[in-house]
Length: 256
Image (cartoon, rainbow, N blue to C red; front, side, top):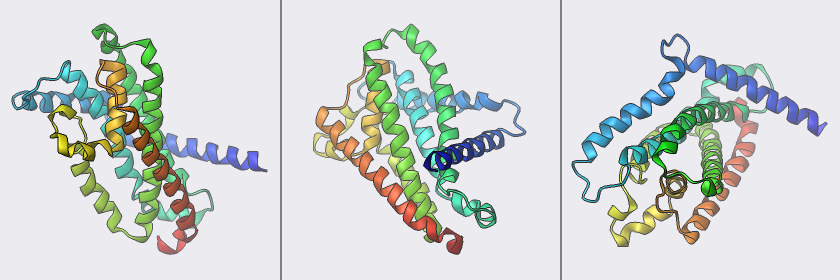
């Protein structure tokens, strides 16, 4: 019985993911090319402007910037689209009984598939750059796991809360703007004053970015203590997200 319900869950999840993928690029001319075009345009504009203001140059800055934007775009787009997803699918929820978690998770899964495709294209020039080492694949995989679990757990939490408190959607959008600049995407941690570094070190996205940067661009890896703290924060968010979503999902029919 358990295996059958799990099979049904994953079939439904895949079906909704396919629907999300088709809807995202429906009637577009360039289609999946936007996967790479968006971060490339961001990289060129931001890179051109910030090179004039950076006191300490960052090696392979455009690569550094591109991988940061790729990771951030996956995280922010998933969170932005997943948070109001239950409210937007109110008609579907009222028509049929199914695991409500498939709605936000299908959005995250479709975004992850986009991320993987764009990331695969990014690896091609990185191989020619000569900074990638096969010995760092475990760090890269751990970074991917942290990124997806953190995104999933936080999305479940904000999605569930947004059904009861619609301000959450606006709050998430506002926080993401601040969070972007509080994450070392367009600058290096060496530019942050020593007495303020702890604020960046408790940000899980900092460790995630550093894992990718270390694996692909021979950047500075996160310290063991910082990585342990950030991993702990991610696990707490995941457990809290699952718990809150399961608790609140019983009342979705009433609140949507």
